[in-house]
Amino acid sequence: MSNVPAELRYASSHEWARLEADGSVTVGITDHAQEALGDVVFVELPEVGKSLGASEAAGVVESVKAASDIYAPLAGEVIAVNEALADAPESVNSDPYGAWFFKLKPASAADLDQLLDAAAYQASCDA
Amino acid sequence: MGQRTPLYDLHVALGAKMVDFGGWDMPLHYGSQVEEHHQVRNDCGVFDVSHMTVVDVVGVQAGEYLRRLLANDVMRLDRVGKALYSVMLNPVGGVVDDLIVYRCVEGYRLVVNAATRAKDLAWLQAQAEGFSVELRERPELAMLAVQGPHALERCTELLSPERAAVVRELKPFHGLALGEWFIARTGYTGEDGLEIILPAGEAPGLFNELVGAGIAPAGLGARDTLRLEAGLNLYGQDMDEGVTPQAANLAWTVAWEPADRDFIGRNALEAQRAAGGAETKLVGLVLEERGVLRAHQVVRVAGIGDGEITSGSFSPTLGKSIALARVPAGTGERAEVEIRGKWYPVRVVKPNFVRHGKPLI
Image 1 (cartoon, rainbow over the protein chains, first blue to last red):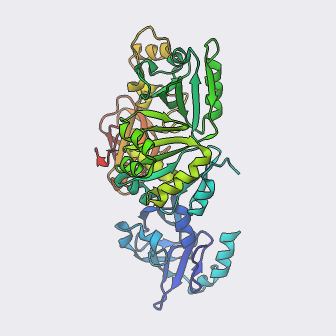
Image 2: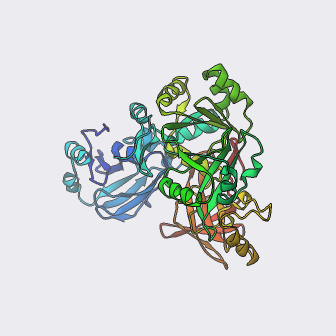
Image 3: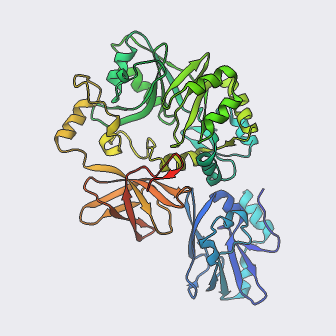
C-alpha cells in the first residue's frame, strides 16, 4: 500500500503538487510511481524559465527498468529545479515527497483545484 | 497466471515484485534491484532459476548426438564433472539457443533457457532421429544459483558435510551429482558461485536456509544487470536464429577442430568465414554522460553505418550506462546513440565490463 499524503494534490499521471506559501507549486512523483519504476538512476529536469502547459512533458525519470516522462500537473513557468537529484537520484525512491523535481509559478492558482485529491488519486491507483 | 516454481510462495512472502518471464511468474526484485546487484558483486546472493529447462541426454550415442547438435565439442569433456558452454545452430548458422552441458556418469545434462523450452525440446527431439539416444526432461527438479565472491564459502558452511565436500572439490565450470542433487560451479553473473539442481520438494528448504543465513534473495532484475556487466548474452535479445556465433561475440565457443566433425550449421559458418566473416559484430558501449542506454536504440557509426542496441541498462557497479550493441563489423572506438531524439557519444569497448567485482573498462 503506497503512501498518499492527504495535504497534496495529484495528477493521474502520478505527479504530486504542493501549493507553497509564496504561491508557487512544487512538483514531484508519487510513492506509487517510484515503486512502479524501481530504482531511479537518472532524472532529466526542465529548464528554469520554461513555460509548460498542463500535462506537457516536463522531464524524464529513468529507472534501471525503464524511462518515463514526467508531466506538468498544471500550466506555469518553471522557477526552480532540484539540482540535488543529479547526484542522488535514489532519493526519489527513498523519499518521494521530499525529492521534488521542479517548482512552477502557476498560470492560475485555481488550476490546482482541478487536480485529484488524495482519496481520488488513491482510487485511480487501485482501479 | 503463469507457471510457478516451487519457491513462488516464498518469493511472495519475501515481498518480491513478481513479473512474467517466458510464461513464468518470477521475482523481478525484493525491494531494490540495485541493492541485490551489489550484494552479489560484493558478497553473495541467491536466485531462483527453477524456470530453466534441464534435459538429460543418455544412450550409447549421447556423445555422438551432441557432437552433431552443438557447435562446441563435447569430446572436450574428457571426464565426468566437466562442463562447457555452447550454442546449437540451425542449418544456416543461426543460434537456436545457448546452453551449458555437463558430463555426467550416465550421459550428459543440458540446461537450456526457459523462454525457449518448447522450441528447444522439439529441436532436440528432431535432431535425435537416427541416434540411439534418449532425452529426459527433468521438470521435477528445481534450480538455485548462489552467486558472489563469498558464495562457495557460505554454501560449505550451510550444506551437509558430504555436499560441502563436493563444493570444495569443484573447479570452475565443473558440476557433480550427489544423489538427486547436482552441484555445479557455474553461473550467469561474472562472479564465482554455484548452481544447485535439486528435487523440487527440497528447494524451499534450501532457499529458506540460505536466506535465513543472511544470503540476499536476488531477482531477475539484478540477474540481468549482472550478466550485462559480465558481457554475457541473453538469448532472444543479443542473439537469435538470425544471428551467427561470429555476430554474437561467440566465435570462441565454436570448435572447428576436428575438421571432420559435421555439426549442424558448420557449412554455413564456413561459408561466412570464406566470404570474409560476419557483416556485424556484437560490441560493448559505454555512455559517459548521464542517461540510460536501452535495447533497440539506434547506434550511428560515422562513415560506416548504423547498428542497434540489443541490451542496455544502468550499470550499478560502474555507476553509468552500458549496453551490448550489434554494429557494422568495421566499427572502431567511437559511436553515437540516439536517446529520445538526441545523439549521445559512446565509447565502443569489448563486451565485458565487470568480472569478479573489478571494472574492466
